Image (cartoon, rainbow, N blue to C red; front, side):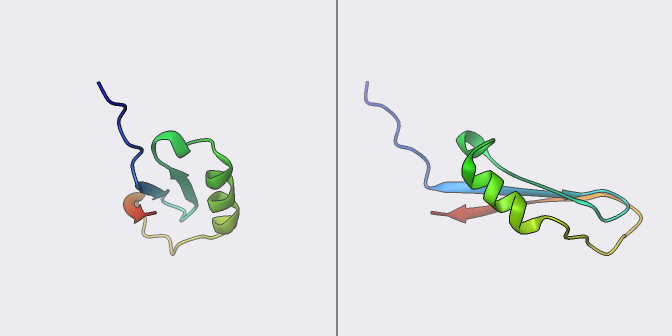
Length: 63
């Protein structure tokens, strides 16, 4: 049985709470990686307009 090819798509998972504070992560094998640390640093301090409720967006990124 051949090994599965690594996925060329990464999901950027962005969620926010009622105050607008963001939480950003990458999916799969990129969780906890240097790439994820870079993405988190890029979004550090970003706040969305408080909407009174939290939310979440999963955005696929093609490598």
